[in-house]
Length: 267
Image 1: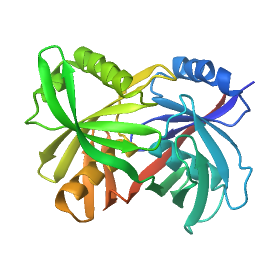
Image 2: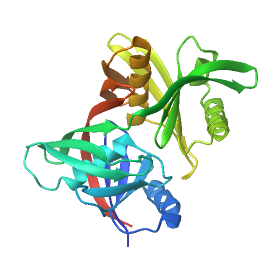
Image 3: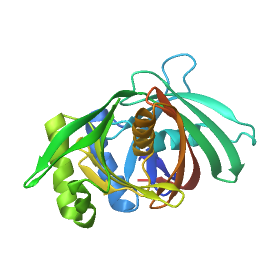
Image 4: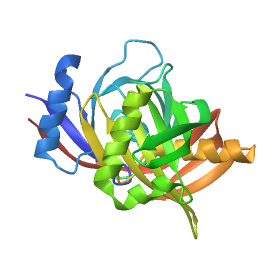
């Protein structure tokens, strides 16, 4: 029997499995959870930490890094503490060093959470092609994930209206880069700052989602805009299901959001 819980970090519904599942079996276990709960966009497997000062170890089903799953894991591991802020270090797939989180209970099953995202390995431009579409895109390489940012002036922005072809493009770009996980981030200005529509592909788990929110994608956009500005930024980036805040630059971004417990289950 597999015990797991469902969490909602700004609409990016995440399952956390607390039962032990061997790594080779995790993709199928994740698929079983996602078949039962179609709203789930990713599944992580949580185990006790094996090093001092680290609260838990989180491995995503595809071995990728996921910032929203870090927020969920911090909420789960915070236990029944009161409203005081806790700081928890997590060992997370796709990140070389433990990831620092902050968590504060806002009510029954509701939390305010923050995570210090791994720094960018590189912020660069790279040429991409899909049939007749050819253009350079900003590429933010991070530990465990990389993101290509597509802005309105790019010919690739038309893929936002052709979702099947966008998925085809993302799979091809990810294979070209040999990435563990890749996002295609459609970023456009709006009245409050920026709006992000993220498409994420994880080859290891075979999942392709137009995500309701994307923590690593939000951090990547902040890193890109900070690199362009030559200074740190503090941004509120609207997503399909809400808003995430990212503050910092290419050397590190603190991402802030909310997390709610949906329920606990067995399978």
